[in-house]
Image 1 (tube, rainbow, N blue to C red):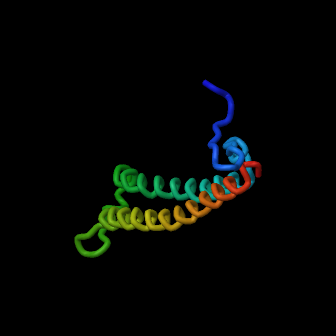
Image 2 (image 1 turned 90 degrees about the horizontal axis):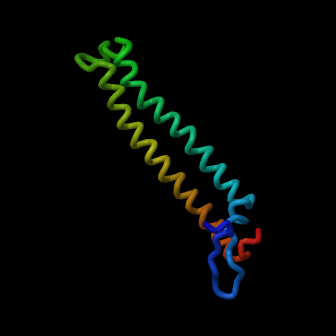
Length: 116
């Protein structure tokens, strides 16, 4: 396996050094922004998702009536569907911004030959 950086050659420009791209401030800011969004959202999703089976297994709190014959378990389960749609919508909007940031990095690297 080669230890040399992977490069892509373009017309009349220097090849892009992807190691330098990865070390650039712009790329590091991009990765930081993604992690700053993805990690908390993933933690929230997992906690919210696993709370229902844990609460139903070890407590009787969710078995109490919410409205008529509808218990809190049903409300919580329905809220998980709503939460999934909301998080998906938020992610799609944020992913569009991440795509713009990635395109900007690619454009800058193509313009400057990856020497930034």
